[in-house]
Image (tube, rainbow, N blue to C red):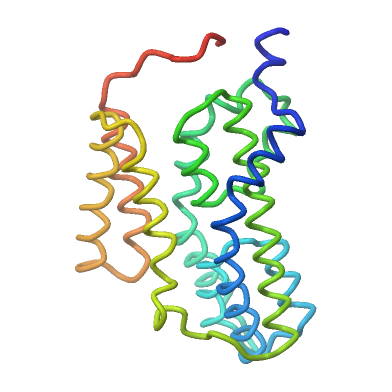
Length: 238
């Protein structure tokens, strides 16, 4: 098998990624349900709500855009707030590029359609390139599926948990990402960028406008990561 072939995930890798992400993705149903309810209350139709969840697949950004939804939609503020919330995906995609570069262009970009915090964090914890891609795509499919199930339940029943923070459910993703960090190799190449991003984001939350902490934290972590010396490759292929 050539190096290029060995870097491409098989159906087995995708199934394994789906299986590994499935337990966490069940919690996504609650957030999808809450979004479905909130979207209907904001005036979106059932079809519009399902279409937004299916095509956008960005929970925080979708909730934020509901605040701007109405008879007239301010397009520029909507684009700006969506970009601010999802700016982290620029660096997430860049960080994952070494595992995508051997794929054909179409498959490379298609693999990123289901990119989210959870499957990216799990995929970055280690393994071969093929297994990482399996987690990214298969795990992303698990998250997308449960997000759509939750949205559908919210649309169907029109009621549910509209304030997940009352039950501590809003902390699930943060706890998951923390577990990924703690479980990863404890070297400066991991701890320094994460620490810089966390401190910068906390400062931005205190002193800058809403959602600015996403960009500030991502930039701070990215700059620190760039300044660190490169680590030797651990995989046998280029």
